[in-house]
Length: 64
Image (cartoon, rainbow, N blue to C red; front, side, top):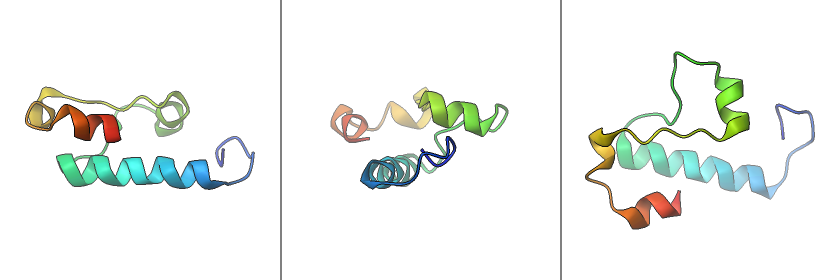
């Protein structure tokens, strides 16, 4: 929404909470630093590489 100049609302807050949970669980950021961050955000392309995600429960991933 912010990137598309469409304002800001609670859904953006919830998306941010998902990013915070992702970082808290994995110790990594959900986006590939080799690719354009804006494209990854707009496509909601979170990465779940086996390390550390194989150790994280499906319920936690669903929460994100």
